Image (cartoon, rainbow, N blue to C red; front, top):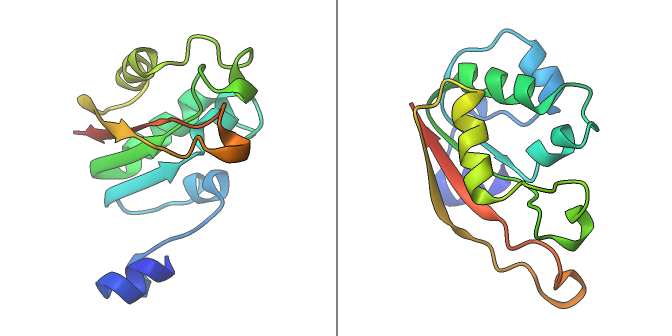
Length: 130
């Protein structure tokens, strides 16, 4: 959030940072752009209190134009057993089946799989549009 304020001069009154379930429970306007980085897989794994499908659907209701996200994937060592099948193709289909987004595109893959994390990360960044 600070980077947006400092580097881009964003209006702090128009930015939100919150616990996701608490935020999605509230009554909010539609946001042009929403991002959730390294969040959705926690719900897929049952650690967020809501199903991942419910979270995605609520996010899609709050998103006016663009939703940026990445999530844990099956190739990561720490998710090899718990996220079996969660690869970019599956994730794209899952988003389209569980939201109001009409398209999902891959923007690239992170290069965070280094040193202690060499067997993890390498996640795809997606953008969803309406």
